[in-house]
Length: 375
Image 1: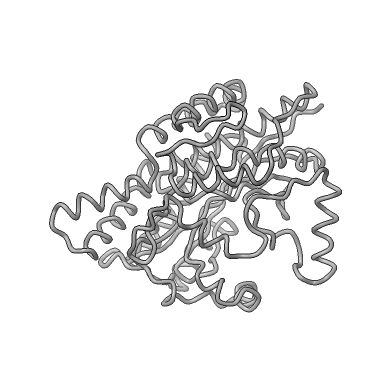
Image 2: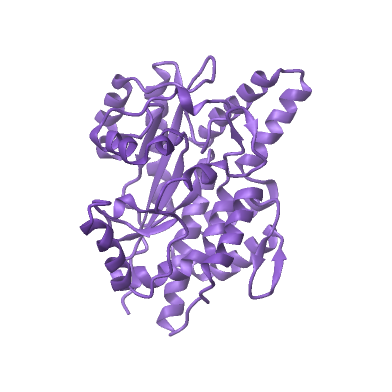
């Protein structure tokens, strides 16, 4: 069997904040024009006017992705600063109220608001999507079933949304709670084949319920535009290096599953109900509590799970030249995700005598700083 490219593409959604108040700010039209002039199709507005989305080129490995992502982050930051703004890569703004936000006036987003009603208005959230190149539809369907097992691990390692409207939600990823209110979200169904997947999607398309696969927002889906599997479960990460570590893990896991397939082996398919329990644990705790290992029949601490994951994909990380990024996962498991760090910043600000709003602003200032690390 010819080995797929396992190329990667990374999409990140950012929120814009005012550098004086750290409140959310709408993107001026001139800012979007400047970004588009320099980055062309690699940047676009998002559903809300306070959001910007970027996407890397198709990259052979995380080395290429690192340079492109640096360029994209730097360019958005450079143009935003001219208007007293800065981007943050966190899945929820700690203090903002969704009820005061405006959506972007474009046909696509007007249709989205019309179709989804009040649910769409609450979508003050940002995510990170990783595409991995698999140019065979049958292979995409087969690996999608197996890859679902690892989606909770990816969510746990990415969590960056503990706060919502000024309150600690006690969640590591509140974004998932908001996003799950949309239709056609959550873990993907366990289709037996590409034909089963296509038949199900075609029912909705032929009825006019959706126009194409892009209106299906599962945690993992075959891309509508590209010959890829697109992982969508992750929060967006403030730190560039964490984004690359998660992209590398996506890439390596799919190559590992492909290697099993070549040997007429496969990862065990677990019931969606059981994987959902791990998804909930990841959403609630991030990496501070373990996930269930269904083979062992026990809850395993997250640092042990990361050690197992790294051992599982070591060969693939070597081939794909991303061992540096894979090793970064140990640091995330040991030190915590952005959700952990945001709570630590708030605790320090509280100890310094700042009021509640001052504490939240300190968290946003921290997110601005982390966005620019390593650029």
